[in-house]
Image (cartoon, rainbow, N blue to C red; front, side, top):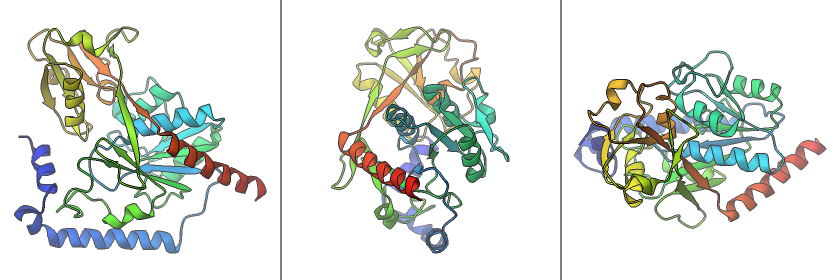
Length: 332
């Protein structure tokens, strides 16, 4: 069992190790609540375009990036010009706004912003100060902004907050860091506009997202695609440097593949040595990992895209909120 799995196991229950860390957890909770109260008492000035926050209150992968991609596509289909702003986790964390291009280097901008830019073609702007990133995106003609992983970034105003939640792990042991997986206390979920659940069961008032794993594409020949079923003839190496790698491995196994699992830390900077397994078996990975491996000297690397299916009840509610926001801007 690797360190990531050990930590996740500790955070899933209120065992002795978690209890020892409770004083630090209490301090963390206090600081988080104070930051939230300061934001509510004196929120930052609003922006002239709607801002949708996509984030979570737990550590680890919950599907924020696939949801951001799906929202970009949905907004564009409904007449908006969306832009995405991000700190650029895993990149350099630019001090001034920088726009991500489809051929940008992941070590400069981060894997998630690069994936979003490649999948959507939207203006994706990275900056430590996401308010500055927002200003830059608006200069590119964006009339609505998505903040990827911005729920705790309280210098940024927000019109709609969307919190992601893993339906199986949910809030773990319900404790804040480091005794548990929470970035903010559990009651924070009651304050957001939408709670989106990936996997597991959505509770009343939450929206269940559908995750679909598509045909794999070759990193060496990006126009070449293969259905996952075509990899069932032999074992495959499955590589994941994401927040919740088990989700990826399980999905491949459910598609009928015999998987040799290789877990790496979230945002891992892959090298050739990481993917040289001494055989010619196919190596399957997420698109988030693939954007960091496009230049590696192998012809057996495949990326498996993940697509989010937005539930109609959610898109209807979101459309109503956006109509209200747009009407308010037009009459202001």
